[in-house]
Length: 339
Length: 261
Image 1 (tube, rainbow over the protein chains, first blue to last red):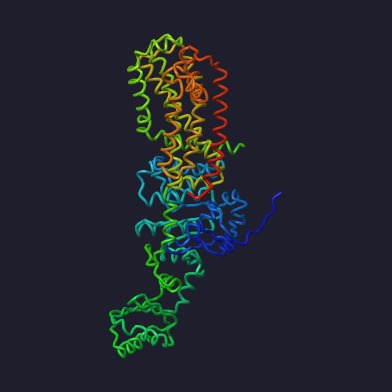
Image 2 (cartoon, rainbow over the protein chains, first blue to last red):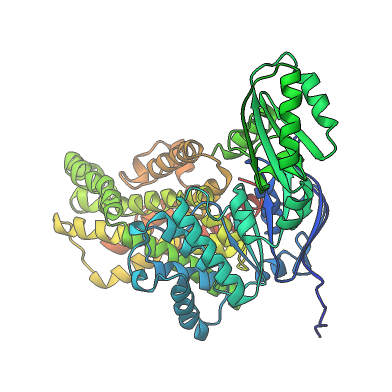
């Protein structure tokens, strides 16, 4: 007899940790994802995003902690977890020499879709990702964006409860990326599934996610909606670049005394201020600067973006080759990559 | 059980699709055995008295043709597992591992596809042998011969899948394969009768499953039985070898793919 258990969360982790040797790739992560939510992990390369996905998809066992996906424990009930998830990997995993349709057929069989439903399901997803007219061409003739769409389609065929998308648009040009975002939104609306995605593009997280977890160095720095994160920053962001470095410390300390400024970040000559009334703050900045004989090379005022949010939580910009080069982390990564 | 069969078939289907689409691969795999049968078969035609001394009446090329068919089977199947490494590198393996199919069905599907491909390649070599004048007294025997080749190749594909799952690099894989493949072929009566080997080498050869396969296939092709090994014994040795290899390969594969690559 099967009891109908009401699953509160699609994904739930408690103190999830994974270490490779003495490197903590995922370090004491706890979070939960609601049913039918689009949840994003945002962070630079090597932050622990993919490792988390690999634990949640049963590919890696956690060193410590617990993770439930669709109510099933990833360590003790891997088969049930696999039955309820779709996983679209970062790299394209479609077979190049097979046609688009053959790839989907393979995926359908791997996921035990009943024989009488296979044809209908394949037609349906091909329609959805607009590849119906290319379905009988070998994938080797597809563009990067088409391959990605086929990959995503493969993850949808069996209507998983939770769909994992690992960096769904990495390596694609901006137009293709926007197109993929449209498909992801369409999928979410049509199939009503929970989507867990990782990305290192701010815009992507902002566009797609109901909630975002910012992850850096294996730890979650903050989880919130993109809107809340941005408004917590203050209403406006002022960036300025200064020339004279001698008085910088005094300059910063005087800036901090301005009441309207909520937070200050400095990165060499570049200073980022989060303020509630930018237009009132700017004249004060100029006044302090001229008193200290500091030359302001440029100043700008804008609405906060998630980029700014990321900087304020991690202290550095999100970049592929982050200024903070972590030798141990890179070494462990290379060791894993080396075939 | 039912789903193990279905899942094995899924992987088998995928591997065969890939084989069918790589036409150049089919030809490249034929080059080496074709050279063996044409070059060695003709170069050593002067050794006829040697094979006659063990009771074999006929051309040397007819004696060694079954050996080259087995050579094709050995190398096609022992190389066959290499795409396991690619699958792990390029994500297909993770795709399969996160789907509900069992790990051993992946290994079994690969092995059965590899052994069928090995038999197809071997039958092409048989065609070449017939084309260059090897006679085949009893054409009906082709079906059981191919059955033996498939069975035998299943064992070697097990070795291949096992090594591919354990090796983390192409270099390790090819190193291991070369270390195993050639000696197993050479230490068998594929090219010369066992009677011509020194006693100690002959006793080592008697431990080699390739020996029994060559003797069995040669008996089926030419009707001459050598070395006093009955066909039943050969079939039994091959079956035990295959059972052990298939079991071991499924176990090792399942264990290895659960580790991070």
